[in-house]
Image 1 (cartoon, one colour):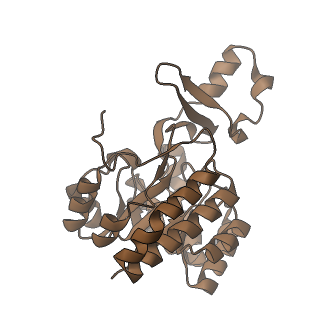
Image 2: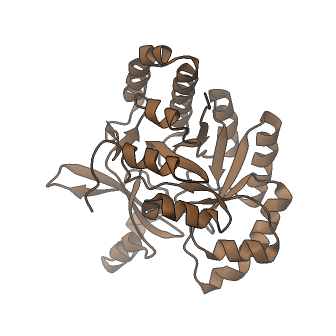
Length: 309
């Protein structure tokens, strides 16, 4: 049986060391200038250190360049990718076609992973970008399990699926929070609000609280629940999905490390036998539930329900 890659978003290089011990196979890192919704800020020097670490332990390192670029950033894409090739990273995550053009012009050969978040919804799209240089497609979080399996069966490139963590529901390139508080003459109240992990958009009608924060790429609003598929991995593994992702954004590093170790146990147990996985999956779910932040209940996202747009 083919084991899927266990991909994690770390908060720092030191955190990566803990995650390697916990069983992570690959890491997604980057900086706000080029990437969206990162669990930690990694400068080129940090990426260099991370690359050395992953090579030492036989792991993979991917860099996020999935931003939405305006003309003022186009000229800096190729030089950045050239530096990433010199470092020796294993993949670039992208959504904007500008990355394909800049990569070609710079004669960079780093593999590309296509990720447009909500819009990667069918295998024709995945194969389209595969023909243009992508070696992997990251499918939308809004797909059901059946749709993911069908996509994998009909796609010529690798498929990556998020199985744990927050999902982004909304992004605006505008600083909506900052502009609001500026209009209210409350700038001083929200100084450093981009680092605040306790800001929520309240929906009283549905009794939900949506995490909201801003970074250099604008405003991001996340789901009120955390996706957790640790006790439902069997069909994804049977379908030979290539990569299972744990997104650590807005979570404490210790929490991400613990969750990574539990998913490592689950994947290894299923590789041993379905019976072994069946015996431990409920216990692993309970362990995650025990460390889950009170404001972040667990659910299975859209894997078993229809997405309503």
